[in-house]
Image (cartoon, rainbow, N blue to C red; front, side, top):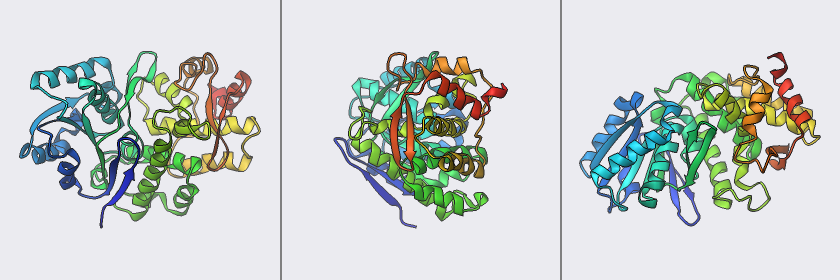
Length: 364
């Protein structure tokens, strides 16, 4: 099947390519000027990354850099190790970084590329559904600190993104399901057809080789592209929500991830966070009960969690207060007034607690 090319406009345009077996397109995205290429990948994916490394060796001086798995890669010491390796190898501004892996690799690798010599080219090859529809597109990069997730970062758009669905063939089912949270989020914030596709399809039929999963990936990528082009640096351009729209569900999600020591899958936390945001909107009189409940039903249908009681309200509240969307001590949420109609909500502490209880927090 022919690959789908989704163009991302703006000051630094690039293409997102969706299809299968796309490795031969990587040299074209890197361009002719690049001599040295650093390939960053999780140590656990070293075997999967090797063919990519081998394909580049014929044309480039390749530096292969293995990273810790998952969120453990997104730290200042790991970033520093990468910078030191680039320096020892003599990387210049005409060289490039390639990331191969999930969202954590994309975030860390993108940050390394953004900061080395104040910015070198990066091409992302996401190998998880989450990476394809979220982390690899849009130019956000970041690392974590002890205070929270992605608090240190930079905006650095890639030179290209290869969403090779064949890399999902070996992805554990639980990770594929977790990635669907970001896809479903896009259905609520912008493209209701995504929700219909999920509701119409047997969850077991949502496999890497299926036409419906490919359509879901393409639709989710287009949602993100449309939002990013309108507000690259999250200034709230346009309707006052802007790129923050993509953070729907993420305010509580990031607090849950921190409470769990980043051992919970990001998509699982986002699913919980979306239900929480829907409950907040319902309590504020913005969202009708049917759409609030639809959040639970669609997410549960594919096997995602919709309740959380493992951490206390005060712990979660303290983390949410340092969320990037917060202003002073005021917590701000992206909320919905209906499908595809978002606003910024500043809930009261009573509403925050009541919504937490509605997702099972009162049982903690």
